[in-house]
Length: 104
Image (cartoon, rainbow, N blue to C red; front, side, top):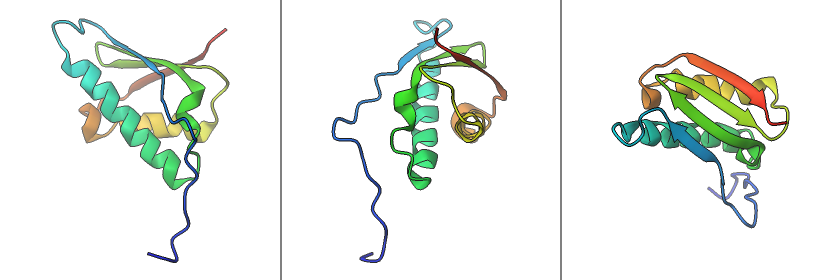
């Protein structure tokens, strides 16, 4: 393991992402699903040496299986693809509807 390259992690690592879900009081599993998606995408970002990835995300909303990501700044195509891969995986029950917006 000595030869492995270290990934830089921000000093104050805090996601500070607003997560919301339709009927989150009756269906709290939706919030858990978003948290799993965040973990999945952060793992992809870490592998690609993009530890600051989630600092670009303002909020994530799950509305009846449709994921809306609001970004603080314009995401790259790769960042959008990480979200899509996570949402279309077993951690999110193979959902596939994702939309992206940049916060004004």
